[in-house]
Image (cartoon, rainbow, N blue to C red; front, side, top):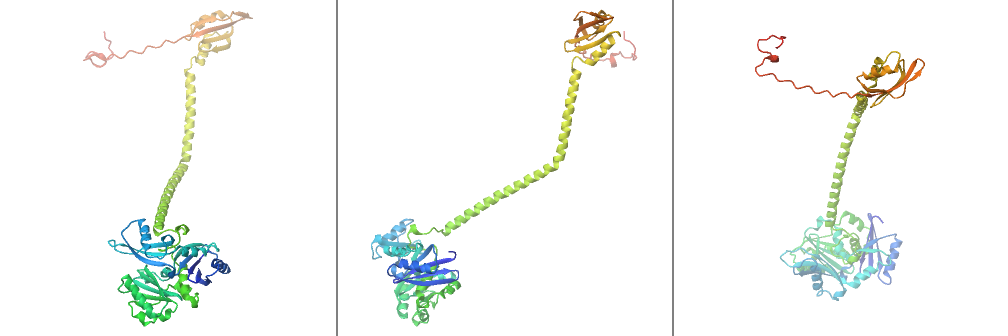
Length: 473
């Protein structure tokens, strides 16, 4: 459901559930006993809370929190070293231990310092079994008091701070250095004098000469804020500087169990990637670290820049192509005019070549017909005239066909004139068929080159003093 978050605080005798939707919160308790998972499912269905994942927070007395000093190690060896050192600080077998660790700030020359949270395997398995009936997946499994810093603003976490949160069962002491968890303890819910002693002992355990502030919240917080014993400690005693959104949500928590309600609200609003998480790795939802987000953002920006570059180049090429298209459209009428002129020129060239081929063809019919007209007598007329490359053949009638042979022999174009068929008589005319071959015109010899004038001779080779036009003898 959009905008819905929920968390469960697992106490020693009951479950405290807080569901936050927008600016409102619902808080209810489920008693531990027979089938607590079924009762939790019923309560969620009754309130219409449809969840895919839920955060789980353990009560501080159910876990062990230690600050360990380790020899300088690197990489994956830290996990093994923590597991080895932790065996001396927990009262249960190593195979039943479930733990997580986070580095603490320190000098590189000193031993590596880590904060470790550990519990029994049955504690984590029991917490996960509560969700089997509801079929809700766990988001994280943390210590509830370790999520309290998410309820205050970031600017208010500067310096060394001790946060005392009180419930009906115990008081959780949370030690923050510049907003980071340095240590947590659980002490009995005693009076203000005993609480002041525990806070002073905790400062000595951490080596803090003084602290910037002491925050008090939970059950009976109003009485503790005016306690002379707490006022005698270093640091200002006050309520936690809740954010405005948290103050609105605190108004929806039950007054008779505000301590557990605040812890459940802290679990609900806790970080998606807490530094100490007891949930097994195979059950954790896939989240992205800040480094992964920065890398993904850099890759996305790079891809967008590359895409923008490609789009810019494509747009530039498109503009260039559009400009070329406009120029081509403007030149199109001129191009078509040039094409028409080129087509007309080609047609005229073909016509000229045809005329030249006709003029160069041998024989040329018109001069031959003119010559025959001039040579044949007036009483002769032709019926057919056939010409080819070898010669010509004529048929017709004449008064005396034998006279045509010498007339045609004297032609400069014809030779070997003869009858191809006997001459026949047709009335007062004689019918004839004559063929002749073409004469081969001799190739003219090239003219001799001009003789150069003799040295010392005058113009035109005349001796000096001679007159123009006088013959040379």
